[in-house]
Length: 431
Image (tube, helix red, strand yellow):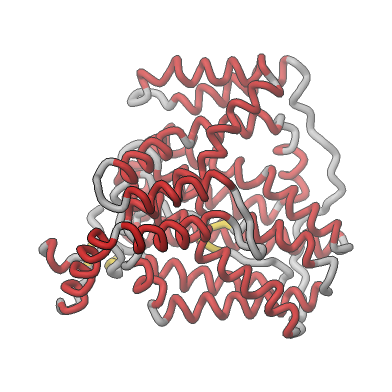
């Protein structure tokens, strides 16, 4: 397919699960296993505590809390495995962390059944946008430099987390960071992030900082929740949650994949996120969708060669799904790791992602003002109307660029117009 007719958001023809399974063993190595494990640890520690905290704030029972954890982790993990095998891309499933934070306050105003009804409606909204291919059409008009600047801004907090972690645990995190950069020169032979994680864990254990905590939560047994529909809950939960899924998580994942030269199936990612929201709602889970930070981790150079990085996503998916099934056992073990160590390792793993995003955002002369605004908004971490920074970074970046960089937008409009006039073609993802 020639460049004239190509669009980065055209639907892709996937290699298929059979091809993904066939090539999976040869891509399963220390790099993919380490990166997938780190992505999973990141998603199974702090975010899990956010859900537990939100459940406590909402007065949920132990059974309801366990069911929530099961829904978002098990279904999110299954999404990771299926997407990775089908597309042979590192597309990770999880749930919206800002969405879980939103529910910490919402559950004090609405019953779990009303919340479940709102989750269901949010899932239906996202599903409609995916099936109608509306998101793919909208994304065509968002310049790539602005998307990448949003990624860099919204994820830069992970890099800053390294500094904060050194301040909290100077010896443990300091040795972890030194190990990472000491091994960075031989990263093609040995993943520096693996060495950093091992050293950090050993030092933490030796200093008595790795202690398994007692968390009163049983084996995950899903409990059916009957949705109750409320107009107030629709406006307070459904709409903000749908925007978070599309404008934060999916947009971050799309940007991370584009930064690594993948061609993400945007419309299908949106459709699946809608299905995930519908499924989880019946078990009290707020959604299961495409994961921004974890996709960025598994798509990075830390996971090895580009064609094999999907194996890291499968590792992450297996661990995620297992966590959902055995949350009562897994939670206290993972919480035994110092939070500062987890934050530092996640930040170190994000370095390559941030470098690629910044280079992609500012390496060309077009859309630079809009990209800078998107970067600044993403860095700010601002939340307006219960909608987090990544969404506003795109809105402000595109708006400013449209006003002050009209010539760049005129060029983009010409490309979009030419592409829309081309016969619809499907791109094949090479394995």
